[in-house]
Each structure stands twice: as structure tokens, then as C-alpha cells.
Amino acid sequence: MSDNVSQYILRRLLDDWGVRRIFGYAGDGIIGFLGALGGAPGVDCPEFVQVRHEEMAAFMACAHAKFTGEVGVCLATSGPGAIHLLNGLYDAKLDHQPVLAIVGQQARAGLGGNFQQEVDLDALFKDVAHEYVQVCMDPAQARHLVDRGMRIALEARTVTCLIVPNDVQQLDAVPEPPRTHGTVHSGPGYSRGRRVPADADLQRAAEILNAGEKVAILVGQGALHAADEVTEVAERLGAGVAKALLGKAVLPDDLPWVTGSIGLLGTKPSWDMMMGCDTLLMVGSSFPYSEFLPEEGQARGVQIDIDGKMIGIRYPMEANLIGDSADTLRALIPLLEQKTDRSWREQIEHNVGDWWNLMQARANESADPINPQLLFAELSNRLPDRAILTADSGSSANWYARDVKLRKGMMGSLSGTLATMGPGVPYAIGAKFAHPDRPVFALVGDGAMQMNGLAELITVAKYWRQWSNPQFCVLVLNNQDLNQVTWELRAMAGEARVPTTQDIPDVHYAQWAELIGLTGIRVDHPEQIGGAWDEALRADRPVLIEAITDPSVPPLPPHITIEQAKSFMYALLGGDPKTGEIIAQSAKQKLEEFLPGR
Image (cartoon, rainbow, N blue to C red):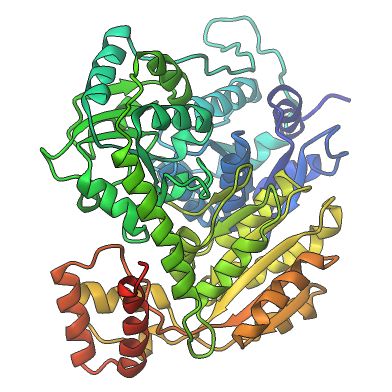
């Protein structure tokens, strides 16, 4: 019996493109695919991972792409299911991740007839999947639509979309289109190849870097595969290396010249390095916040990026190198001179050492009841080798950025560009399916947990027994406050906290975990933190740690501007309901910078 279109598409994804799993949710708009997924996973079709909501399927597909480099694939029904995918797909698009979305559509004969669940899916996906969105109107198209959807996603590092009407899904497949005018005969496979700039451009970049006396390097996710090359360049140039958030795992945080994150969630050593450098090398990053980069005219610049569209838009560079970061750095290294004056590097290392001492001191400051920084610092000290960390958008991202030391071999990510709430738990699930042998940690706030994390714990409960290593831990910061936005109100708008918009319900997260068969641990005293992490790491099943944290602990930026200080004071003078606690915590945190030895 021959395959139908749905079976053919799934087999081609599995056999010819190596797609091992698809994340999705059932609906009658993809009835043909649901039948095809009834085959043997890994033999007849990819494994199907059932999520609680289609947005989570897109997040998991994005996470799969981030943690494997492969195309993540998600599946949703027509109409509402397709619409639900959008936020997760935009997350993938804006973070330049290859994702293929397969969505159903109403039968061809009903299109244009205001049929139930009929949505103009071409128009709906035209922005998020602007490189490639196509409708399979004839079985003979299926082969090249799959091949092009996968290949374009990989080449453009973006989202592509394949729309399949439900009647087409069940038609007989056409594995080989007829050899006639107007048909397309594609083949599978993709190889990125070696991409390096011209010799003259490399020489120009080397001249700039060799002339610099105080070189700063900024790396992003485009350098994740170029750690050795970045290290050698930094050693030759006597440079320090700052990391955009998506590039946190490029280099270990225990290297003395790695200054850590940059930006509002960044470190003071990164700020000091950028304000003091005379040369800037950006590798695989499009970090957008100009106020955290050198002033125009202060530094000469060199940028390396594989995407020519992203070159020269963040800082006026003298040399723009379009190419793969690892290949380009390998070609550049022989042209770089070894700097003998190490005073700049020594200053950076001194600042980095002071910073980590400051972070530990701040984490140890008392709070009511728990200082969130201590949770992250204690986890950092216990992280198993090869751990994978995900963080959600919100205050949890602050502490992930600053207080967690990633070591060599670890991975970590979050929603970098879209900065959407909600991907922390689904990212972790996607990572665990991709790497079932590795420990995975999701670091989220209570707002994101209520938004979708609680529901996706059901997905964890459904599948965890399939994982070869059950270590999967979700940390929830329970402060009953949309804390990141609260601090933005104070520091950016000069507004007092608004309880009607910022208060969120107190949910018993640990009890929920226990209710669905996971391990739940509730922590409401700082002395319990170390033991909670130890218990979580010993557990024979996934664990949720619910920590009752103090919302008044400030996520201090690396440099406080006059405008931020004014806004902060206006907020306090405006009757912020937590003025007393805020003043006390801010004073303690800031005072640590000025104590002897800092």
C-alpha cells in the first residue's frame, strides 16, 4: 500500500533530513498527519511530543534548534492551532533559529467560502516565515516543499512554514513528480560549507586589532562553536571578553578575563571594559544597546558575522567581515601579533575577580525571606557537568546572567531578542528531549510559571520516564510580583509600583508538582537552599523547587545613570508601597561595592 501525502512528508523528514521528533498538538485540521504519526516512531515517522498548547510546541522546536543546531519542527492544526504557534515562531525568527512549522488548512474546495476555522494562513505566516511559506495544493509538490522548507530554514537560520489542506494530507503521495514542464524535482541535503572573508578584508581587520592597546571582545550566539578560536584571539591581543546573553555559554565564566554579560543585565567589568577600550571586536553578536558599547569615536571596530544584513548596525566598524565566526577567526589568527604589554588584561582580570567577590557578598545579604541571588549562587556551585540551563524573561534572567557560572561543556539559553515570557519550561523540555542524558534546569519567575509553566509540567510528568537521566529541575521564584516590570516602572518611568497590575496570586507550586507525580520542594528560609538543591540533584524524578523570594532585592544595573537615579527617587517619593524595604535592600546591595577589598 502506497503512502499518502502525510506519511510521505513525515518519512522524508525522518529518512532524508534526520528529523527525530516533532512537537505539536492534535486537531482535525491535521487529521492525515495524526494517522501517519500512529506508525512506529523512528521507523515510519518521527517521534511525536504532545504539548499542552501549540505555542509551547513552537518554543520547544526553537529550543531543539538552539541546543542541537538542527531544524526544530512543530505541528499544529488549522485556524486556532496555527495562530497559537506565532509567539514561539517569532521567538525562533528573532533569535535566528531554524524551525519548520507544519500546519493544517481546510479542504481546498472550501477555501474562500468562510468555512469553519478558515484563516488566511499565507497572510498570517508571511512575516514570521517570510523566507518561505507555501501551501501544498498538489501531492506532487510535497517533495520539494519539504526539501526547500528544511534547506531554507538552515541556510537563512529562520522560520519556514508548510501549509497542507486536510484533503491533500490523505491523497496518495507522488514521490517522483512526472517529468513534464512545470514540475520541480528536488533532492535532500544541506552543507553550509566554509565561509571566510577576502584576504584583503582579513588583513585590514588584523591591522586594526594589532594597533589597539586596549582591545575588548564581545561575543554572541554566533560564536558558540568558536570558543577555541575566541580564546586564542583574546590571548594574542591581551583582550577581555564580554558575552551577550545568547552567548553566555561561548566561554566558561571561570576564565579570569571573561567579564560576563553585558547590558542592563550585565556586569560592571563588562561596563568598565567597554568604557575603557580603544578597539572593539564583535563576533557573532548583534547586541543592540549602544549605551553599553564604546562611544562613537572612542574605539576602532571590527565585526564578524555570517549575515551581511547584521553587519555594521550597532557600532561604526572600520572592518566588516562576513563569514562563519570560527572559520574567520582561524583565518585571522595568523595575522595577529602577540601583545607583550599585558597591563590592560591584568586590569580586566582584577575587575573580574572583584566582581565575583561582590556577587557572592550580595548573594549573602539578608532578605525577607530569601535573597534570590543566593538561590542562583548555590546552584552555580553545584551544577553537574554538561548541565543545560534555560531562563525565562523577567528577574530570573538577571540572576542567571550575573550569578551563574557556566563551565566548559555546559549550555544555556533564553528568549534573547523577543524577550517573551514563557519559554523557560518549554525550552527545558525541548533541551531534555534533545539531550535526555544531560541534567536540565529551568529558572523561572512565578509570572511565567503561571502563564504556561504549570501546564507544561504535565508534559514533563507524561514523558520523564523515557529520559535516560531523570535530572530535570524547575526553580520558581515565588515573590507574587511581576518583578522585572515592577523595577522597570521604578527605574525607567519613575512610577511607584502599581499593585493592581503587578500583584499575582500566591500559587502552591511545589504542591502542584507533587499532585502530578513529580517531586516538590518548598524553600522559605536561606538555610534551606543548599539542602534543597542537593535533594533535587539526588531525586529519582523531575523536581520543582518553589522558593519564597524577596521582591525588594534590586537587580542593580552595572552603571546607574542620572536619569535612572532620578526615576528611582521619583518612584519612592511617589508612594511606592515597598519604599522602606527597597531602600534597605538597595543600600545593602550597593554598599557592598565600597567595602574594603572591593
